[in-house]
Amino acid sequence: MKKQNKSLVQILLPFGHFFFALASAVLGAIIVSWPLLLFFTFIEKSYQTVNLTIGQVMANYNQLLWYLVWPWKKKLLMTNLPTSASAASHFAEVKNLFILCEIVFLLGLALGCYFKQKKESIKLNQTWALLLMILPIVVLPFALTNFDSFFRAFHTLIFHNSNWLFDPETDPVINVLTEGFFAACFAVGGVIYELYFARFLLDK
Image (cartoon, rainbow, N blue to C red; front, side, top):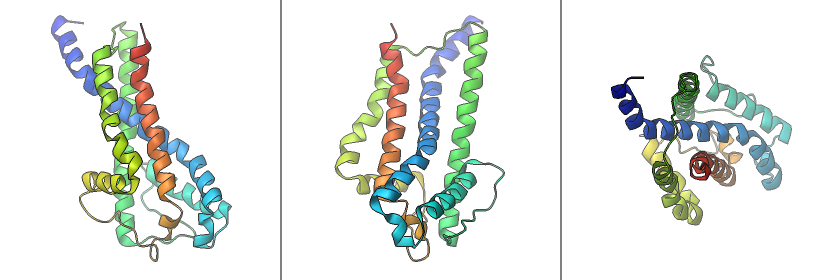
């Protein structure tokens, strides 16, 4: 690899690792969200608020997840849980973000394999790894002490409308996607993100 190209790679390296770690955290949280929802549905008995069985709740969540992660699934339809137009619009925005994460993750894997084949190091130095690890830790106290406010601030930052504010009467799915469930998903994503950079600090 030419010296100029090597310099460019080193400049872009922290950004590449950051976005790959973020995409990995999101996708990891999506995967773990299924057993998490099963756990919270059982513990909080949220299935009773929508007059469904636990099995029906999970079947509807399967339909929601499939819509969110599969690019060619164009319409959201949950068998037992109706969806308003505003909620459908919000889920479409979430779908776009999830698909973006999938693209970033696959692109990151492809680039990693390419550089490995070329025997070029894309290892992140420990200073950058530490700096990128600190980023979520800054918001951790706020998230732990008042997750509801953190959740609202997060959605206000990411989404430029109020479609994420669901009415339980028209969008009963929000009764099973509880605050505890979302907090657990965020926690899983945070742990994955931190572990990604921690390995660079532990690698001598």
